Each structure stands twice: as structure tokens, then as C-alpha cells.
Length: 219
Image 1 (tube, helix red, strand yellow):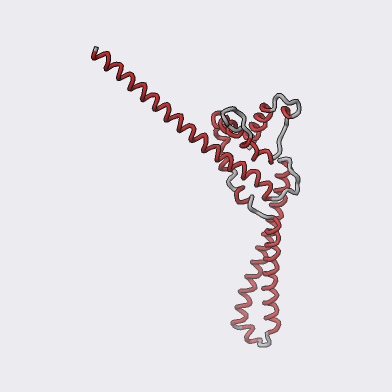
Image 2 (image 1 turned 45 degrees about the vertical axis):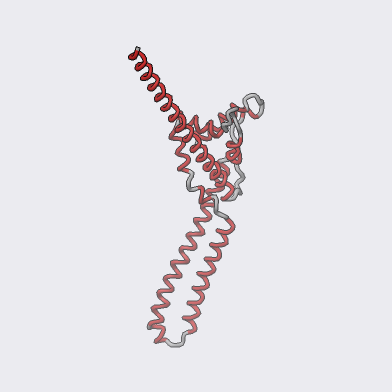
């Protein structure tokens, strides 16, 4: 990630080299990432993103494993924090309802022998379930809060507001990854085309050579 971002910054400063302010940037906003593909850096139509990809591909191909590393952000970018928060709260309430129902059933039962029989087994099993469900909901809430703290740290680290939403923060990376994949395909097809042209050229040269030799033989 550091290598890729450093290269983006270097290319950006180079492109804006003639500008006193824009040519001396020490960083960039994440919202800049999706814009790289639309910025044409050459008369041939290559975007600055493609130039960055080609540079990294030739100089440090391992850095492009970033494409695979960013795969999880596809799912993270679809998370709505408010919906997740509400879902956990609703789950907590449902578990509480089950617990209250079991307690009411136990308190309302007048048949002590029945309590000690099959119903007692049922309440015991359900009691264990409620205990397990309660612990799971608590753990889920703790994990959710931990994710929020981690997201805040990531937002600050990348120069974004601490209250940036999950989907917005990871959305930048998701779109950037999607565009890298598109550029990867463009570069791949371009390489295949060059290989075919070189192969055709060599074949044509060999045929011309053979024809020339044949002509000399006839003479």
C-alpha cells in the first residue's frame, strides 16, 4: 500500500510540476483515487492510473498484490453502520423476550412435579440457549464497537474525518481496486497484442529470408 500510494503521489507531483502549489504535495485525499483513471496523462490516451500501473508492473510487481489484498473491502464497502447497529439492538431485544417468556412460564407453573419433570428439562435447555445467545450478542456488540474504533483510526491515518462511515471509507478503496483491475486487463491485452505483432514480424522476416535464399538459388 505504501509503495503504491508513494508512486501515486510522485506521479501527481510530476504532472503538476509546473504549478508552485500543486507540484509540491506531501499527500492526497482518498477521494482522489477514483479520479486517476479519468485523468489522461498522454496524447495516446493513457490515463495516469495506467501509467502508474505500468511503472509498478515493471519496477515492483509485488506491490500490485494490493489488488488481491484489497478484495475484502468489497464486502466492507457495503456495510451500513446504522443498519448493523440497529440489527444488533433488535437481536438483543429478541433474546431478552425469550428469556422473559421462559421466566414467566416457570413462575406461572403451579405443578411442582411437572416442573421437576419434562418441563424442567425444557427450561434447562432453553436457559442454556438464552445464556449462550446473550453472550453472543454481547460479543457481537463489542466487536462492532471495536470495528468502529478501528475505522476511526484508519480514517485519521488516511487524512479523513474520524466520523467517516464504513461504506464511504472502504468505498474509495473498492472503486480504486475495481479501476486497477480494469487497467490490469488493458495492460494484459496490450501485451498480448504486442507479442502477436512481434511474432508476426519475425514470421514475415523468416519468410522473406527464405524467399530471398530461394531466389538466389534459382539464379
